[in-house]
Amino acid sequence: MKYFRLYLFISIITLISCKQKSGNDNIIGSWQLVYPEEREKMAERVKSFGGDVPKAVYTFNSDSSYTNQWIAGGKVDETESEAGKFSIQNNGKTLVVTTTDAGGGLQNQVMDIISITSSKMIVQNTEG
Image (cartoon, rainbow, N blue to C red; front, side):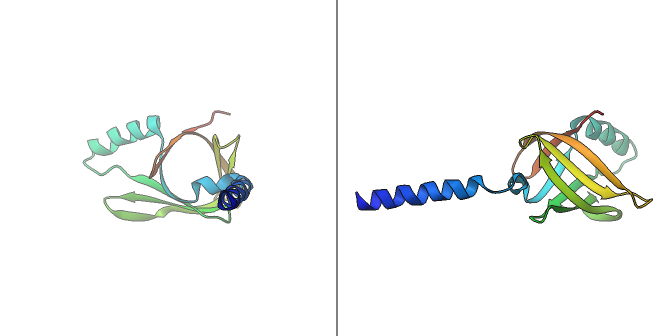
């Protein structure tokens, strides 16, 4: 009985500490972002020219920074890579990435998170 109480106490403490993590913690790591509608259109255009469909791979870090790389044909396109900050909003349903545009201003891209699998995050650009 003594061990059961200790186990129960440790379980409760673990649950409380997990609950206190920030909302960004559940997406730390690398994900291929997939835009279902846009990707279909892009795939058709690229394949018509005989090329590989590029994929956007985002790496989200615990300090709320991210890097993004486009990969096509096994090669990283350095000209399309970017970095910035990200946040998860709306109870884990919205991803906001912030980057600096060519003029030095901040630019936000807001996406609804449709689903997350082991390596892909299915998103849709939010209107407005």
